[in-house]
Length: 330
Image (tube, rainbow, N blue to C red; front, side):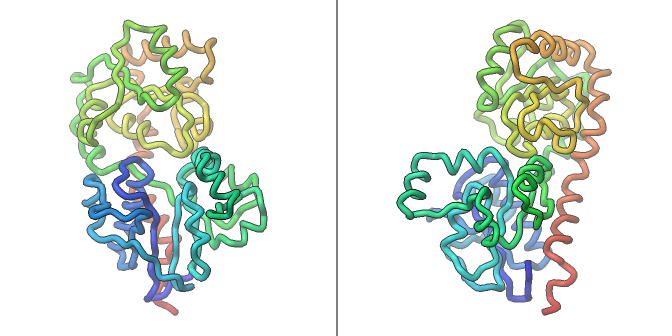
């Protein structure tokens, strides 16, 4: 990316959306603004007040229009690549927050119809001609790097993410003796296999993470001992990290980003393929984490250390990618 003192960096987001991806988009804009770079959230749909209440601590301004010139940069998540083709001069960047969701988005019936009718054009990674349209790629996970390399894309850099500071602060006051024998799960992730585990071990105290504010999520995790996640892990998911930093043992499947030790660096003994023959072993692992919690939680200290350093890493990545110290040379 070529930045000048007049450059504007637009980061695309849906309005009033509160999940890990949108929060990361707002965090990037906040970090860039603090460095004196003119970055703005561009909301895809008009709303009177499009900033979700959770994100008003990151930004207080936004735009619904983009200045299409070659000094500016347009960053879109992989699910919104159609926006890239509305502009002709701006520098175009895809931020791969997820791999799986890229295909989910393209396969939606509405998007397939729009693509067929020529109403919308989407980035097709399997078509090398489309590679030339993109100035740069940003990667949130090792999983996304492996994916891009399969299609011979090498013009990328890591721009990862970090757990909210309030989770880090709360972790300082978590006391093991106050933990309850609670096993947490996120109902939308790997729900079919998770249901089988729950049905096989009804005596465990299962609690879903659902319909809670960030503060409520933190409070629930802080009082629990184990978090299981047999979802797809389309990127470096936040909930496993939030659970780990608040002193939960983490047990996952091996789908997506969970398969590698860069994105979820927990001991292999806590990772299982999601098939029926492993349910007994998963139950035993949960049981061990509950009854031997003081010993088992020590195995996650390296993961906790990584999580604590992720905000500093994110800032270093920003400084390198956006050439903070050189941006006013031109």
